[in-house]
Length: 214
Picture 1 (cartoon, rainbow, N blue to C red):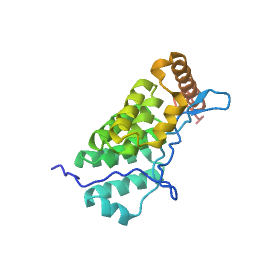
Picture 2: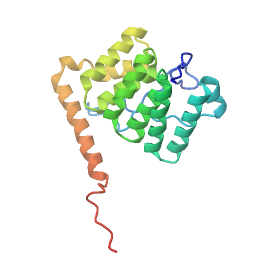
Picture 3: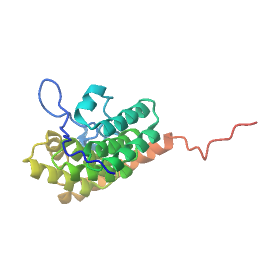
Picture 4: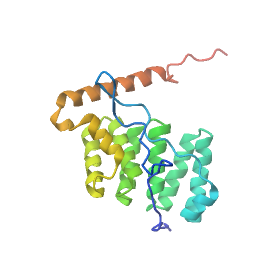
């Protein structure tokens, strides 16, 4: 029997002192030479929370899944962490946090943004005003070369919240309206593709590694 977590909240993280949300490390930025650059990582996987914090926010069953997922993540057992999160989502389908966490694990730790999109989409559907869910979806789409879709999510969130997200305002200042600048859009896509090639060329492929001599 599926359990419903209707009381769950998903507040954006805050930077101590100024009350503003943290700038995501994967937001497009303009270099000194005027070119647009896109850092590798999207929003980082959150640090493990104290049990008391998780217990106060989530039902016991969901909390146990989250604890197990964090244990696997902290041990760099990312596939196992993802498996546990999928189980949590199956039992608690209304948990936007579990969906967001699965998307963040795939995008930030496993570097599979395309596979993270579905989880972020569900997190946004469940919690459309969550800044971190929206930013997660934006960056997963962006890093999957779906720039137009990423900007659709940006505009959706800003329209819904009255231009609330400072990260999005900064991004729009950097890149402007890509629909009106095909040259810039092409340049961004080329940069993202080049970065993918760089990452794949430095990651050993088990199939191509020489086998050990007996």
